[in-house]
Amino acid sequence: MQSSLPDWFSTAKKKNNNDQADQESPEGKVSKGDTHLELARESLAKLLDDTRVPDSIRNTLKSEYQEIKTMLDKLEHGHVHIAVFGRVCVGKSSVLNALLGKEVFSTSILHGETKTVGMQAWEEYQDGGVFLLDTPGINEIEGEEREQMAHDVASRADLLLFVIDSDLTDVEMEALKIIAEDKRPILLVVNKSDQYSEEEQLQLRKIIRDRVKGLISAENIVFTAAQPAKQTVVYIDEDGSENETVRQRPVDIVNLKSRAWDIIEAEGKTLSALNATLFAGNLSEKVGLSILEARREVAEKTIHMYCIGKGVAVAVNPLPIADLVAAATVDVGMIIHLSKIYGLPMTKSEAGGLIKTIAAQMLVLYGTVWATHFVSSALKLGTGGLSTLITAAAQGAIAYYSTLVIGQVAESYLSKGKSWGDAGPKFVVQEILDSLDRGSVMSEAKGEILEYIRNKAKK
Image (cartoon, rainbow, N blue to C red):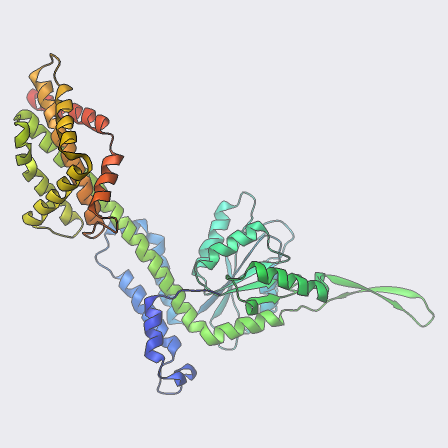
């Protein structure tokens, strides 16, 4: 099975390259699995104790943070979780019962009998600490919530048993590709093998092997008969009479049990550590995105505040067009404010340099002719025999629009960690300008400016 391992895994591997004997955990030495577990514990603990994460984000991701505590406890006790996955009625619960050697999970013929996630210790495994998890079917009718539950469990398990009973359906193939993205080991369990002859099993194995190539290695495709059908046997007694009897075929779970134990014994602790670290990585990404979204919301309000402030100031104290640049001190203050929101403080000089870069790219894209046309057109919108206040509001709208562009471009630059990205500043400025409907922005800006001025005049 193809996989990509996190940085800590590579680091741990390098630490142990010169000591192959560590695999056997001789007295006085630490095994590779223990090293991986310790690194995973550190990763989870740091994420759990990170004081930079706001309480609001922790509350939003409350269930994920609780999962970290559960995983830390799981790592502490060296537990390994094996989850079964598959369609309804392929025999998922039967496979688990066969591994346990007793009836624990429900195997009702009713469609979708498994409604919640069930867990049972696999006591037969000699070292203990291995738990089997049953999940709802992936093709439940009106069972989207249960299907999502199955995906969630699969993403947190250390080893997956994907159970089928024939060639993979489109639904199964799609689900298999999704869970394979999590880079957990997967055993593809072809159940109900007693329904096929030896020749048919060989043909089916070849078909399945070709279909899952690149997702599951050939040695991880195993055939089982977890709940074989009863067999009718006809025999002839001494007097030549034919008689029938029914006998129960034996359960065939040996190959699955053997392969699962091989994986657990060779990689059990590392699997748990890898799973925990993958989860921590996913949660870190969620936290980062949540923080970024929260910052963007604050940044959006901040930019709007500066747009109104600059627009009203220009409207109340109309400036010659050439002197609008003097109002850039407002934009400098806005960028400094935005830089603090993103935790990347900038000086006045840096903010001024950023404004010059943005302005230069606007000139490259549209040139001075466009800029002059833009200003004159905006002013025309405010004339035509209307009051001086309306004309002033139009000029204020120009200031509003320019600050909006500068603010959104600066916010994009800061959200990427003071980077323009691979495409450079021209692309970012172009993207922002294309996203704004200039006419609508100007119209809304004038309305806000006039409303603000009139409200002030009433007080």
